[in-house]
Length: 422
Ligand SMILES: *Cc1c(COP(=O)(O)O)cnc(C)c1O
Image (tube, rainbow, N blue to C red):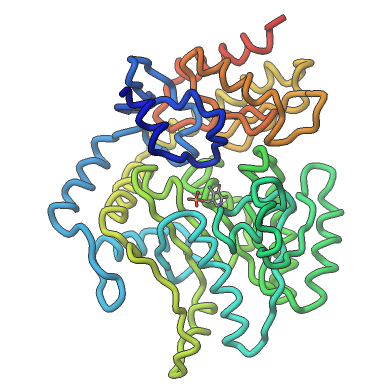
């Protein structure tokens, strides 16, 4: 049996209608920008393997760090015990987010969000002010566990679970021209005094279709929450670690969130790891002789040393000036390409935040994840050995920072080929 046949016999893939999944490609090796398939293809990873990869695949520096850690300490219980790599990582992350004080470890983006929501609810509970409402953006995506689904937009992804999702107040995304409406909606909600927290994807809503909005309005929304005693949770799972052109998307605003969620690029895309980082104001509300005020949350692999070692090594690479020169090169190349294609009649909008470039195609159908253009676009680029995984009719490039200018040109040329088609 081929790998593909065996895969079909035994494996159920994520976000995949298995009835039609005839074309799942076995990847046997990856290096830098490229994935190598069993049948000898070499495919450019234009989406950083679900937005996780920063420095290229199988990076030797990360590989060495993880191997050395494995030979020293592969895992240890994280209650009652600690270890050097978790401490190093926490100290360095606080160094990058100096307005926050304490780091809580988990395993992925969904759990990082889950932890933030539980901290927010329990913060108010412990302070004897039981606020029970959460505000989120329409079409938000914060993960696939029940809490993170609850704060996500209601759509076909979570429709079977509607009866089990807790109530959330959704406000419009403050895209260009809609800022005042969102501000007004938020103002009306926070004045009711029962809101525990406002959660948002800062500047770019990833899964919604790379929907973007400006730092100026985010700043106003966060400020409004602060003045009304509403906690703010920045879900930087996708936007963190240089994606938007700065270390974090929230580096574009001066009024800072109370909680930040990190995952995806945290380990350079090599290992699963999530972090929820909070202020001492929140942390202190859990200090008590009363057991019921404890934060009773944890996972078997909380603070896994291998993942922490990968994350520390990824920070080493991110701190190199050459990485930021690469990020700058990607940002500038995207800008030039954007202005070249912006007025193409096939495109409704071209938008960019940092290293993320998104092209929204005009179609007869509404813009959505299930838009039929999706499969055609996906296949067109895959046939050219470029992995781009459109969100419906929104095609985007979100490359690893190791990509070279000539390789970006190959992707741009393929996009132009598609735009020029009959
Ligand atoms: C991917 C993502 C998540 C969920 O992370 P997982 O590791 O897939 O659970 C949460 N929030 C945002 C903004 C994401 O992009």
